[in-house]
Amino acid sequence: MCTNGFPANIFASYLPFLKELGYSGTQTSSLVTIRCLSAFTGMTLVPLFYRRINLRTGLALSCLILAAAYFIHSFARSYAGYVVGAACMGLAHGFGGMIPISLLIRNWFRQKRGTAISISTVGMGIGSIVLPPLVVRVAQNVSLPAAFRMTSYISLAIMVLAFLIIRDTPDECGLTPFGYEKAAAETDGPAAAEGRDISRGPRYCMLLGLMLLGGVAMSAAGHYTTLFTSVGYSKEEAALSFSLLGISLTTSKLLFGPMADRFDNRKTSLLFLVLLTLGAVSCALSPLHPLLMYAGTLFMGLGFTPATVGISLYAADFSSAKNYPSLLKDFQRAYMVGGILFTAVPGKLFDLFGSYVISYWMFAGMVVAFTIILLLVYRITEVKCT
Image (cartoon, rainbow, N blue to C red):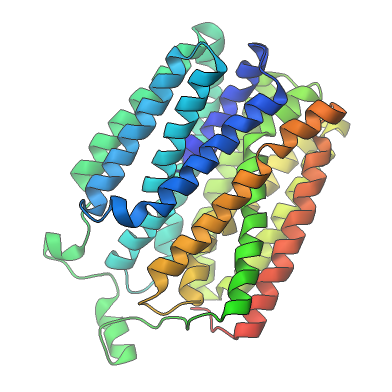
């Protein structure tokens, strides 16, 4: 919830208030771009960051960096101040995001990893349900700085919990990984079955596809409230719709992992990507009727799971155990590059055409392109999904 949801989702609730302060669409979108650039830097430095500290300490420090980011935002009085806060937010996302979380799950689980990753990312959805209406209420009834500080204090509380609860490996608690005995019996060894290493051509195709997916996930989620308020809906209606996104996102995460474990990642991803496409189209049509606004966030929330849970599972399908950390980092970085390239686009299009609607038609096309790439790569590599 903290290092993934707060930078990527919750910050979107603040953007309409920044526009009311006089910042342009390009400036508010650029803050999301800066966050993505900083997150990309953090992901690149993950091996160095965790070389001297363990996963437990690193995740706690990431929560601390995020708390500092929102604290900086609460005192910002110029665009430069928000830039500094966005940069810190991105570092927290890079150091404490899905890379260390996936490695933790790999240490603790030999089977049902899809289900475990799904559960671990549910916090993002819970945060998206609870916090956006609260942020709007505090910002309107108290002040915008107070709303920023509230998020900072929540991040500090999560930092303490993370440090007290998390352990890097089951050995530290005198336990064995979940499914260890069954995996050892099935493979006649200590590890569960892994995918095989992807070849160069399909690898580049996946990197390109994940850039498109990252552009949608990072940019669409960051511009819901500005899209809906720009076409005439109130901030309260936009925040309510964003909370619906959190509910659907949480539900989809609880479904995606078990479905991937039960069936396979390829078929499960296809279903959810179809929902994501329908959501983007509904958002583009949202000026026509309020139900389309709510349908857009509902379907996009249901369809976003390949961008959260899916990437770690794709890396496992396309790599051996030895090369999994490296491929996971490359996949996550490609995803983040997409965010860097596309997060400022909606703001620029708004400044040019006076509408965010065109951006969501673009997002729909990007999801279709990623879906085609993903299915082709699975077919070419003939990976047996676990």
